[in-house]
Length: 231
Image (tube, rainbow, N blue to C red; front, side, top):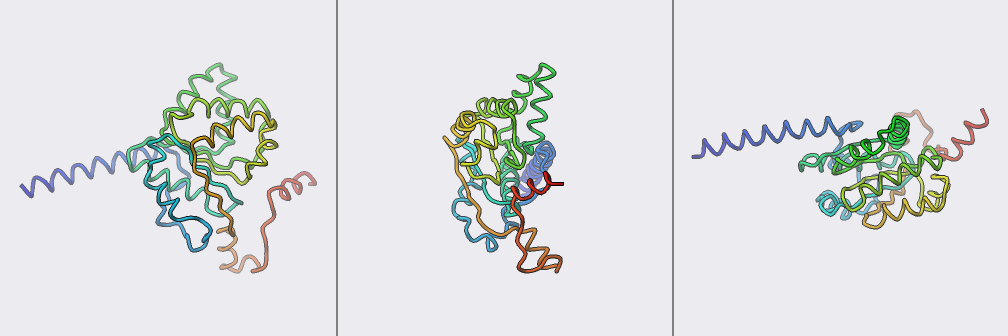
């Protein structure tokens, strides 16, 4: 009997592992990182209790959203990916897309008269991870397509979103205050927001390697954009 139990357990483990590998491949994650690898000591402002609750995936069962806010390099994408890995391990279909790729995908689908089919395909993922909201502005047409996707998934499936912009800046980001309000309404109605205020991990590593002076500070996204315009 013990031998049979061990054989069945081994078979189940093998199937689970193969399923997990398939779901991770379909998720298109930039890399696989876990919550255990996240350095909470470097970002003490993060409420670990909230993150642990999110790791329980109740938000997925309730079709709620997770919004991770903070400046570049503080670990937003790491947390988003780690929650995605948890969801994939639990058997959920996950899809990771940077916002620029999402917008390009939707615009192309619209031009080719297959927008509804594309929106439906993007709705299959139980957890959709949208990365880097706010790094590039949208025009009204792009923002409208983004809203249609959110509306399609509203109260039906979860979104994990990362952004370097506070909610007050979303009107400018989407080029329309009314549309930005509608987008926020869909995202925030059932959601958990984690606001990360801390130093960049990348700057920390550069300081450790001696590449960057210890008192150096990162330039803001606005300064970076202004610099690019002056060139």
